Length: 637
Image (cartoon, rainbow, N blue to C red; front, side):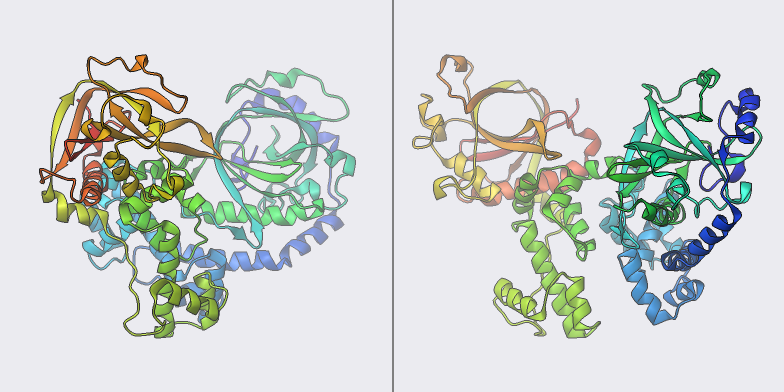
């Protein structure tokens, strides 16, 4: 096999042992493309407007990547490298990379700085090399992009997160997933490289689907694989065939070559490993596949790999795969497998949620996509967001867009049409109506509405003296719990904070099923509120339920009570906990404020500052007893 970028240095392992058989293959039963066909195909590739445009933008990208560490990386210089006039380049750059030039360069600089931080003793000083005015502005931009400070990024040894995958490349919708792929066996025919070993492989991808090059019978089948490779005589071929065997291992032996195949067929084992797998929807007309694959391949190798600091395995097996519905490009990676571990760990840092929305406010943000990044179901994400920021994420996104659009309208930074499109408004009339509806005031005024969210880390610094905590070891105890639901019969509040307080205050006399527990009045008993992780995913999201429970006394046997199907006995594990309380001796006068203070300080600040101490294998919970709130965070012994 040969990498699409590596040239003939990349040869299949073990080929020298089978030189005679491979040389015999190269002498006969190989498809040779007629010179006239090669000439016409080359002309079509050269005249492809999309490819010509991509190559110009690639020149701009090469200039940007080579000038990230100095102030010469300007729009005018990048436009000159691409061969475009500056004002036109600015417009097409935003459309091509799906973000403005300045934002694109800043995000690249932050990723280059993140890579450099691993070897720097003082990470904040790295920002000066990448054109940030001072360590403070660098640290702020770094935290806004990645959700952690440069120092924490270094100490936690995070991977550099990928730049957002472009939604479309020259009109083609692309998907990406990271996989550990097992070895497969391919049997098929070989096509000799049009220009021998000097064939530009990025231009000659998906070669068998060129019109009239192979018969429809040869191209038929639900699962085809194509791979460029050198035989033992160093001749370059494109092997195209069916997957005839799936192995259970990453690497398998090449002993299969002793098998005799009839009809001039050739066989190849493609070893497995870590892969970035790109794909796009297969067009109805197969003759369009090569042109689309050229665009995808150029995007992957010339843009995506260097932008995201990937290290491709040049001794690995880059190959194409063609199924009934999609076309795939498999890229082997030595380093850079992004399994979203960074973002999963980020879910505990709630301040990053607002930062992410603010830095992607012009993107097509949805609750589903935001929830997935945070590691919650859409419903849980909305509840937690409201609990900490006192506003729903959808309302915040709308208000933030209204605020920013209104600001740009007043400053006349761009045409009305571009501002409306940028912030996802269909018309100026719609914008004005929504602005009036959300803020109860007219737009375009100098003293317009200002929309921001609380900085949770800042909130913790400002309010940590209002709470106290102590680390204590507790014994395990049991509760009888019931899942609580919002907006039940219009009596129960929809906000999660108010919901918790409602159930803490409620005696359960009028609310099934806890009304049948003969423990006396609920308000005189200890109550626990906690999240319960459901055993199954729903639509790819981990789902949590909210449970309220009464603490059983030591001499009580909860199993002796008749519990209905909605109730369950749970044991709260013992061990070390950091226990947070307010300074007040009575939280009953304003329990919602007390609850928000404790949870914001614990989750918004303390947990992130003490991440290495927190035991994430146990659950946090809130205890209500004697009109006081106690927030329990499990910590390691």
